[in-house]
Image (cartoon, rainbow, N blue to C red):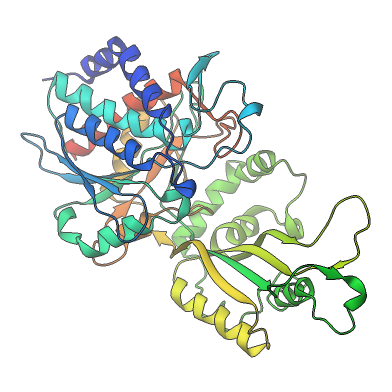
Length: 459
């Protein structure tokens, strides 16, 4: 019977080849927000999939957008089928001159492959594909794979959503959606997440479609900036409670199982680790212990991401601005419905006489997702982590962030999910200057992906 050690040896022997392939993909920009290099990147991934023996195609887009890369890879004796999700798009690069190495050269400096998309998420994408390549070249695929690679994760995953809604039959037979994380032998502590919050990205704007005017006109000409401030002020009170009617109606408290997981998070010192990661000395309302994680994981948010209007330079400029805009996001917890919340916001603005405040979606409009703790995928991750000498995972019932898992876990697909990775990794500057993944992390993640596929196939 094949030993996984033979697969690990094969990965080590082909290390330079795998790293080179990752560098090639990183050198190809794929910035969804700018519609830059998306099709070229998708075609590169189709080529990689076909090279490892998979069927692969680009799903035509609906309107404008980025194609979903869809494909299938079958094992001769595989009895189980999983969906492999990964994203191939990235955020823009705001200041390329500030990078230690140009963001699309993918140079290796001090073992770091520096490039936009290195950690988020072309590194993990290539790692899982190279794991499959190694398995096929040494033995065979232990599970059947259905690929759904997303070119719009950074802007809401809308083409993926359309594809899954229109073609659920293409995922027939799948048991779970697999979204592997990053592992490093230097960081033996691990985490596992069973879901994530939902999200609505929106913009409020007041545009009087005129030039800036002298502020002396204030007594007789409306000010868009004040209209926006009043709109924002109507949505939240000074205790940070959202004032939109019905906003909290469908929220349920955490279950007994959730509270048991939270107690373990507290015992493991996750609160202090969060504080360190955020670079803060205290949490809002002096939250700590169980209350901290109940608030963090099981309460929704309404966050102002940014405000723009008029002039805020160092000198005086007495103007009545012509427009004002604010970007916001709402994080949703289980049982809240994104479409319902959107309608509540529309009703709120109308009820408060703020019909002139325009409401537009700018990205996500997705619900939260949760999977049980005892699924085959969660159990497989536990076995993989133990087998590879990592410490037992700290389990989060869900994370505060958002991803497209809900499109898979919601009807009609009803798949389950769990994701895992090394805990307390240093900042890898995802979305920022000098984003990187180390070659050690890339190769370790490749081995972990191969081990997961092997373990899941045996379950």
